[in-house]
Image 1 (tube, rainbow, N blue to C red):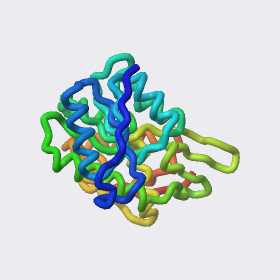
Image 2 (cartoon, rainbow, N blue to C red):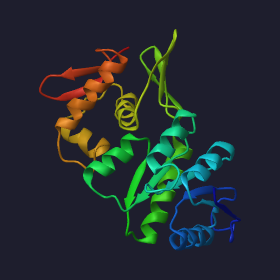
Image 3 (tube, helix red, strand yellow):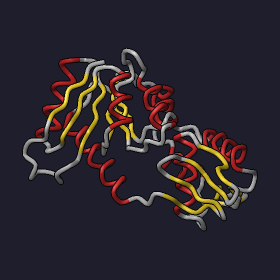
Length: 234
């Protein structure tokens, strides 16, 4: 289990105290990215295998996780799944050479908020990190879904009687879209653009609406004939 800890330099460039966990087994790339994060004013820890990443993710506070997929000990998506099951809701970006649509869908469904394919531009990586930081700071932690509450960190939907279901990353994205605009009807094209931007197939929308109904009940999403879907009730 290999880890490296670095302190932020140039702390006036970004709010002090922002910490990034980078889990990357390529030694050269890992050290380059740590220097990049340092230059941007972020304190960073580097874990060179999945087991080290899991240990750090469970024992330290981070603002963003940057995780490779092809890791020793614990594969990147398995690592993220373990963190999510432990209620670690830190925004995660998957950074990997696996760039097919199926790979990106698997990463986003596995709990990641973003997915960037190698090779990449470092300015784009930093921009995506900033987006995750803004999203995390500005977002509420729970949303109402009828009489239930949807926890955006743990992805659990809880009613008066306790936990109803825990959602996958993509299921949670879809429910969040509906819950943030409970009276709005979303067409399939709009849902694809917001929840499935890497895919063109509108059939994904029907599939994930089915998943939500199966987990939360048939009335959680209403079909508006000829228009699309909107939030229902639990």
